[in-house]
Image 1 (cartoon, rainbow, N blue to C red):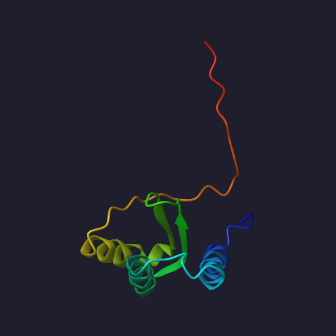
Image 2: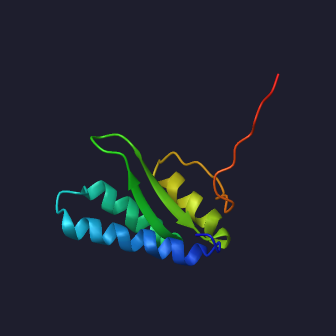
Length: 98
């Protein structure tokens, strides 16, 4: 992460998802698997399911050159999406003084 290697981070996220599914057979649903497959086909290199109990979100890591294809596919699936860029500088804080 510190080196900004988006490929490696994506592959680690993806591997983590596969290990989660192997270790917990009830850890996914068919609709989640479908979204995962669509995302991967559309250029995502990493996937993370966040939250539990019927709430949360899905995080995809997508190469910049695949971003438009990915967004188009997610829109076709009727999914809400938020675009953001990672900050490779770690946590920063802003001190506000009066």
